[in-house]
Length: 392
Image (tube, one colour):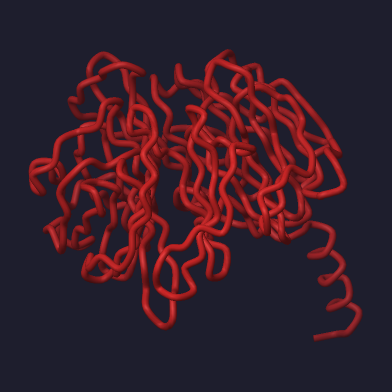
């Protein structure tokens, strides 16, 4: 290739930044952080809106397709939309109970050519992602002999090799992703967080934050490795654990607080514990030695906080009300439950706002935002989905 043409291509790529899909709960790295670079928080503008029906599912984006869920008139609906226009590609509806706080909680997950969804009542469906054709479906509660939790299943599916992991039962369950058959299971009280899979001394492990506390199991077999007692009011352990090298951070609301646990020995040993960070169900992110998260309760006071991972001490805070947070390219993206979108530097030097905009969404915005391919997606509990363009 001509060197001049190559130089132009390099400059063009550098100018446009790196775009990244977000095809699963908490993003491709399962930690709330996108690898996307070059997006422009100061040029944010609304691109399109779409009504989905009630619920709390966020979106998964793969290429030019977006997947999410909503509820209306006694039915859940799984949507496949054009990610850039919001136009419907396909949808699929099925009967589902509503309960308090209507609608699905889990987020669809794309794996290869398949899409996996989970309802608040335990209905797990595998679709052909391109067409919406159902490949298999089961009720995971019925198949494993577990009861539902008070506010409905919130665990998104986690794909691990040929397994699909869920926070159902005290130490999770696994389904065969190709057939829906139960691969392994546990019984007992589960909670609302999604499993987190990680490597430890050559073994694939899953961190399951259930009602009794943190359970570490062998991902392939469900064999229990370690546990740490952590009971919270209403059995709500709703924020995903954060795996930080050989340590695991957990946090809960209802005046419980947070703890850092050392797992280097294969047992869970407390490093520190305090009440500085109380994640009710909004998961935190870890960047360069610091943990950023939403401390506070839904419909109440809330703070965007930065704490030091080494000892849990507070570094700074910014009152934004309750909300949720993700990160990308050294920047924080926080959505307040009132619909205000905050974009700030991820720095321990203090809250450094890059931009702030109203999404036009009314309360309650409890669903985490998603950044994918230069677009931030935000939704509220009533099911209004807003796409915000932050491409350069």
